[in-house]
Every structure is written in structure tokens, then in C-alpha cells.
Image (cartoon, rainbow, N blue to C red; front, side, top):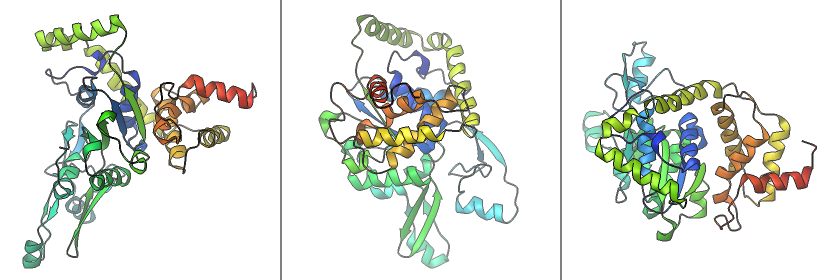
Length: 348
């Protein structure tokens, strides 16, 4: 585990269990499609993202590759690495830590996707590509604070790359393709405006975060933060074992994920839930299945349970529901279970 002494421990964050679970699930299975964290300021959103990246293991990358390609993975390499692989050249591998790449609100499209030097291409016949934020994000976590304040077409680009795992840049008939496989984490304060429903739907999971309302938990937040600021090294030592347990659980879940299966009756249950709650399209159903399988793997199981489906629905459906998706009652496992009992009784 890569441990930086100046980073607040993930396991020391008080409460915010849904947010932490959603982040962990996306790290285990980036195919879920990222997470949008909605809520007020000062609720450990940024802290959680950076703390999670800090406890993840080093990743294998090609030495000298600016995109951090790993040809052993079933993902596309950059053009330079792929050319070497095709020629049978053995690529030297090094370990790099997983980073959090920030995307600033004022970022232009060229800054995000990168640029092709057309003049150089015309004169030399060779491509010269200046890497953008998506290239830096490959293999890392891409953190977009206040994503609702970005221009819609920039958000579209981010979501497309997150879904496809590649970034394609085309200028004047010249194109460049490179891997852009990352865990997308967006945060926003709903009071400052919302994303269009079409963009909301593209996020795999969404969670709502609030400051602690329980006095004891709120005091615990204050005490831990003060202890951390007083002596970061000593504070972090208290959580070394807890951090290792989370890191090990994530690694085991990644291995187990490919072995997880789901029965047909749970596929039907997933479809029924989406229909009952008035969810449009099929992205929600597919994401719910991916999330449920990831939950099963994280909990050390090879089979998805009904409880996994209900927990996945809490994370996948709220931002896709047509009616009051963020009302005070929200969408909880209890509501889903009551609906399931009403519809099916004890037959399941």
C-alpha cells in the first residue's frame, strides 16, 4: 500500500458510508461509470477521494509512457506502446502510484482532450500530440469539483471517455487515440444549479452527503481533525491496520469480480424495480447489475443476492427517477423491500 503521511486516512472519515461505499465500488469496477456526489460543502468529499487513492496499491505501467499504459490489461494502449507491442518489443514495466487528477472549472476543451500539432504533422508527416487532462487521468481517479458549473459539452466529453475508456482527438483530418480509463468522481452543490437529466443519467452512481446531525458523531469529526492537524504522522499510525484491511478487501474483490454470477430471477427483479420506479432506458438496469455484482465481490461472495440488488438500486436509481428523485424520503432499501414484499410476498 502506498502510504503518504500527509494524507488523511480513508478509514478515519466519520460517517458518509454511502459515499465511501460508492467510491470503493467504482475503484473495484470502473465499468460502473463513476459517481456523482451531491451535497453541501465541508462534508469530506475531496478528502475521501484523495484518501482512497492513497491507500490503493501501486499500478504497473510501461517505463517512460506518459499515459501509464499497461499492456497486460485488456485495455487499449497508446499508439507508441501499441507499435512496440506489434513489433514484438518487450516493454519494461515500472510501478506508479495512483493519483487524483483535478479538472479545473475553467478548463477548455483543448486542455481536457489534448491537442495535435497540425503544422508539425504537415511538415514532418509525424503526429505530435500534447497530452490533456484525460491522458493524465488514465489509470487514475479524475476528480471534478463543482461539475455542474462546467460547460455541458465538456461534461459530455468526460462521460464519453469514462464510458469508452479511450480519448479520440481529431484535427484537420489528423486523429490521435489514447487510453483514458479512469474512475470519474464529480461533486456538486445542488443549490448552485443542477446537471441536465441526460448528463445525470450517464453517471453510474449518485450519493447525497450531509454534515453529521448526531452530536457525538459531529464531535468525533472535530476531534479527529484536530488530532490530525496536531500530529499527522502519529494520527495516521492509528489507522494503518484499518487502511490495510480496506486495501486488501478491494484487491480481493477485483479478483473475485470476474467469478461473480447472477441468477435470472434477479435480472427480472432488476427490470421490475426500474419499471416500477419509472426509470427511462436500460442504462440503469445494466448499471444496477454491475453494481450488485461488485457488491457481492466486495462482500466475498460469488453469487448476487436480492440484498445486493436493493443496495445497488439505492445508488443507481435516485438520479434517474422521473418523480422527486431527491425528496426527503429518498430511495432506501426499506422502501424497496416493502415494495418487493407487496409484489411477491414470500415467494422469493
